[in-house]
Amino acid sequence: MVEKIPIWHKTLLTLEEAAVYSGIGVSKLRELSNDESCTFVVWNGRKRLLKRKELDEFIRVAYSI
Image 1 (cartoon, rainbow, N blue to C red):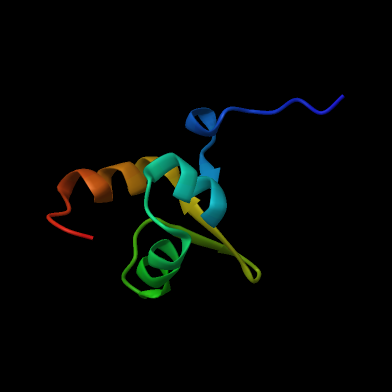
Image 2 (image 1 turned 60 degrees about the vertical axis):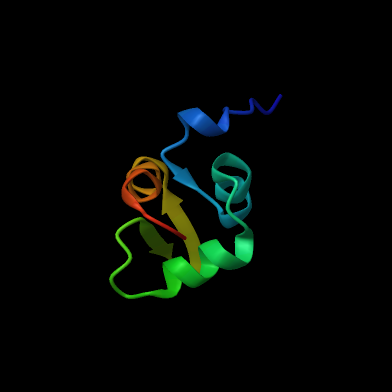
């Protein structure tokens, strides 16, 4: 049996999970995480994962997205 971990307990999120979690669209998250100065993205080969806590902090301090 596969146990599902709630999104708010995960450390790293896929783009789709991050979109559901944050309310920001997948396209916008992809655009933000393509920037080389992005602090909340981790690359696992070609797979893009977003750090949940850093994404929360980015949203908290952002004036607009």
